[in-house]
Image (cartoon, rainbow, N blue to C red; front, side):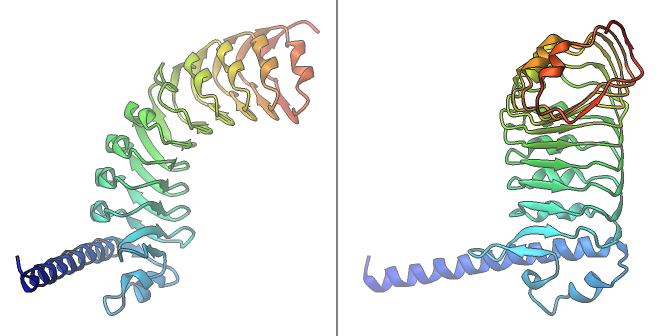
Length: 302
């Protein structure tokens, strides 16, 4: 092949790459405008005025683009007082890594199309008015590290597939109306998990002993649900645990003596259960303990 033919071929390839990049950028802009179209109240007219086709979407408020490719990497609209539903077209932002819409008035369902965003690392949707189930498609986000959809009105079971996302560091579903139980093998595929917060729901069943295999867990909050049975002694394996909150359930039996192994524990709440027996003397040796709640149980002894 001659040099001229090679140069011509390279020029064609470069042109095709630019065409594809332009089409992908147009897809991002289309998805963002579809998202904007679902907004019914924007108190400061931030997006109404700023998200305009006359300017590059990479310069729009709340948008972060990658330096190599002019594609949307971050969408952060936290604390803007926005009222809206989440447009399903958000699933077309294929380079998105961070989705933060916390502390607004988003309502309606979480679109299943979010499960298409394979690069997503962070979902923060807490403090909104979202309802309906947690989409099972979130269980396909293999790079997800933070999943926080606390303080909404979500219902139904937590999809088990979410507990197979080995990249997860934080799972927070506090104050929803979720039901069902936690899987018995909950921690077998969560080696990086540091925070598990599901307080204030309608979850039931036993506390899985496998929680003891989440060795990096620092915060475990299962309070104010309908959990029953005993506190598993395997929790004593969580040497990094700082907060253990199990109050407001239907737990029975005693506090396991293995609690003595939680040397980093600063907060222990087991109030408002049906626990009995002696209070383990080992609790007195937890030098980091700053808060202890044992009231409304059936403890006996000294």
